[in-house]
Length: 222
Image (tube, rainbow, N blue to C red; front, side, top):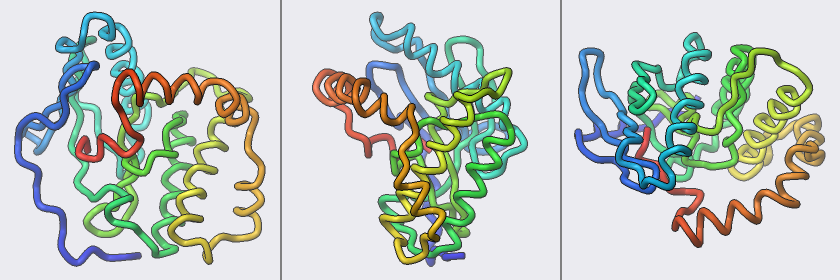
């Protein structure tokens, strides 16, 4: 497993991010650093969506309590979500090239699925961390889904989670891809085909033009 020569410096308490969906801040609780997502400061016209996203994150983190290397849910009262801080460097900064990192990343995604959670946002590099000891970590569960029953849609979305993880492996460590992994990459699932044909265009207009987001933003929200 790849090692980082200098562990990331501990983050200082304070505001990490402030946007239309509220405020994300870092504080120190009894168990260590905590990330607080406060939807009460969201704009009035996005507050309902901010609460829905925070609720999705709380539900997913609660379901995945036994999964390692993801944040731990501390509390959720319907307005403010508090979770543990996950120390590490975002993938696009750390640029992992060790095949062991990506083997562990695929294993982490499978553990998440066994816990009944699909992440649904693994295409974004800032949602992947390289932890101080070189292991992969995952953050940002606002789009995650933890259904009561795992049907066909869950399986298809889970496959897309794995395919997105493999896309990062192809970018940083292409020579380590197996024949089976290349076959998975070559076959885009039907949720992805529908998204690319319809939803992604709307998403790009809303996030980049109306909200001023970019896919690599949010790397400090660990």
